[in-house]
Length: 252
Image (cartoon, rainbow, N blue to C red; front, side, top):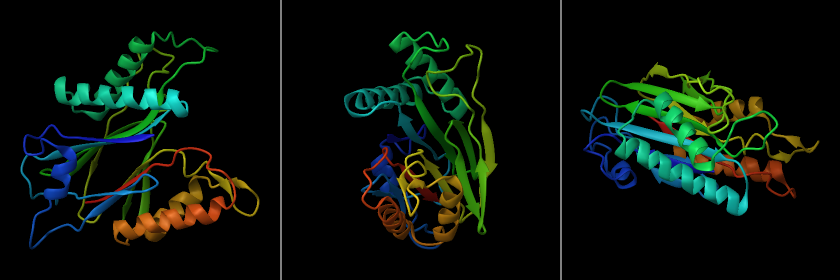
């Protein structure tokens, strides 16, 4: 699993550094936001309506394979996203996923025939337009959660993986959401929900995951990270970790 940030905005030439410096100071400032990938990393979100022309593209990616094969797929996916957004200047999430899937198929010479084991990735990718307070999202198996006023809304992904589409004419679906200040957005892999543990040694599953995010969404993002870690450690117990775990949270 890996996460990726990019921006078509000239005012955000270096996404990671810019995220840390883009928060306006004084009235209307948005507090630091957090992203969790096991050990966690802290980023900041520009306030809605404050930075003209600023947009941000965020992706949470879950690649097939573990160890060296998984690392290879992650490196390839990361480089392809850099190419698509920064060199090809494709910014619509669905079009990014279409191009990413095509590049994976071409690079690995995959035929996408049924019964053949191919490599690919599941992904949730969104573009946030801070000037117009809108979010565009497209997903390959991985949905997007938005919590507003205590209510979680799921925008479902397409049931296709990057590089594994069985239909050469398939195009990913682009969703547009109007954002409000205080909205919490979550992108994630299936690592959290697929972890075995608990009293019956079952998967964590999506419903409890939604309930957990709804319960903690009003906390500062750094505290949410700690809560997620604590819940996962208690759930997992003595079990080994089933898969990589990636959760990205962003409050706008």
